[in-house]
Structure formats: C-alpha cells, structure tokens
Length: 390
Image (tube, rainbow, N blue to C red):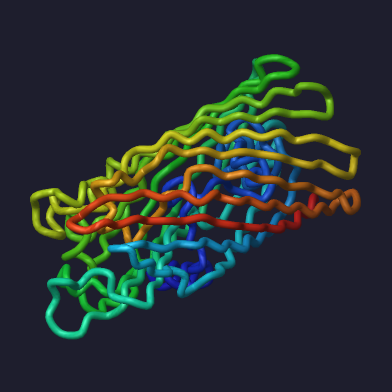
C-alpha cells in the first residue's frame, strides 16, 4: 500500500497548497469559484470532499479537473528578502464520479489533493548553529485523499453521507542541519479516517448542512522523527463546517459556509516553537499554528440554461503568530483573503466545462526571534474541469 500511495503522491506531488492554513480554499472547480462554499450547495461529484451528504443531489457523472497554482512566498530577515519560489508553478489534478444505486441512494469516489506546502530558497535560512557548510532551505509537503462515499436521502428533506478517507502524505525538507536533520530526502505517511455529512431542505428556497471530518491518524515520518513532535507524527487535523444555500430567485443562489480547522490538536503543527521539549518529543517544538475559522461565501447566477457564472470570497483567521515566524520560514501559510470567480458552460446534454480563478491577497506576519523577520505570501490559481453525465 505504501508503494502504491507513494506513486499516487508522486503524480499529485504538485499539490503545494497554502490557502486556509495548509488546506485548499475549496474542493472542485465549481466550489472554488464560490470561495470554496459547498456544505449545503452540491454542484458536482467532488462535493464529497466538502460534504458527502450532497452526493445524492448531483447527476450521475464522471469528472476530471486540473488546477494551476502559483504561490509567491518570501521571507525578509534583517532587511534582506529571500525569495522562496524555487518552484513557481504547480499542477493539481482531481477525479470524481457518482452513480445512483437505488432510489435515493448514491455511491461515489473522489481523489483529490487536500493540502500541502512548498518553499524553496536559494539560501540557508537556518543553520546559524550548524557546523560545516549548510544547505539551502526548502520544504515540500503534499496530501492526497481517496474518498469512497455513500449518500442517501430520507423523508422530511434530509440527506446523509459518509466518506471513508484513505490518506497519503509525502514530505521532504532541506537546510535543517541546525535541527539535526541532514539530507533525509522524501518520506511518506499513510492513514485514514472518515467524513460525515448532513443536509436538510428546510424550505423551497433554503437548504442547510453540516459536515465533520475526523482526525486522520497517519503513520509517522520516520526520517523526520527527530524534527516533528511525537517522533515524526503528522496527523491531519479534524475540522467541521456548517452552511446554507439560499435561492434569492430561480436563477441566483447564495452559498455561505463557516469552517473550523483544529490545527492545534496535532502537536507537530500546533506546538509553539518555544516548547521546552527536544525536537521529536511529544512536547517538542512545532509550527505553532492556531486553530482557524474560515468563512466561505459566493453567488452562482444562471445566465441561461447553458451558462452559470460565480463570484466568491474566502477569509481565514491567521494560523501563524508573531512568536512563531522563525520555524515557519519553512511554511509561511499566512494568506487570509481570497477573491474568486468562475463559470460553467453546458456544451451539450451530457458534457459541461467549468473554470475558476482565485487570488489570495498578499499577507505579512512579522516577529523578532532575535532579529527582525517577516513572512510574506500571495497566490494565484486557475482551474478547469470536464464533467460527463451518464
């Protein structure tokens, strides 16, 4: 299984996301055009990545998508700016399908990049205490989720869904000699958990929903057992979201979600950099990320039976505080505000094409770990998907 997931992670290793913390701002091209909103607004089979209950509401179909992602990340230390864009562009594929098993019961499968982070500097940012010639600082972390899903509708306008999540991660970092890690190379981690979902058609115009993803229990990054807390543990944090979709009129839908991501429950992510333990210990230093609250909202307008256009906005609270900027030179996931747009064109009765564009505005977090240090990031992304109904 590790070999097969390693291959899959290689194919999606460009999933170097850093949007709502290190999770993607949305899942599926249509939802990404709405700021990521979709807890109560199912638009295609990749809705299982947001709320598996929505699967029963979409057409039977196959879908493939591809996102181009271009983050601009840098750090400024003692007045000198270091560019972190050794790799400037990334391509992130996804795949999903849905089939009806019986009246009111559906099955689907989604394969997608959940999140990640990538930096590459042409300089050693750490290693002030390391002997010898330090290597340049870089990090590459990606996550792949495979989610078989069942969804069913019951009386009273309710629907439920459950996804079994099989997860894989890949990680590599360089320039960590100061922390006792030298030339460790890539390591992989596998594990899983579940996502549960519910929706309710409360009235003709209003649908509400809720979803919860458990913590995903992952095997350890053995090569980085001396870096990450709990001997290389890097579980995926739990998260939950609620949302609604309101039909303002027959052609216009307003979607609104609120999500909470529990980064602090994973010690390697949530422990402060000032934690007293040794690197790799349960109470050892981590990235110091706070839990975040994310607001995702957007409007979808049906211009004609063949054309839908979308606008959206996504805002997350800041996961990184000024006290933890030093270690987060590896992972400067500081962006908070995203503006998005998108559209779907119905080419014929069975085929549609969708796109989105998102811009995450530049954000800076500054601190003083013995010297003035600032993290900066902004992002652009663009995606296309093809959906074949059957």
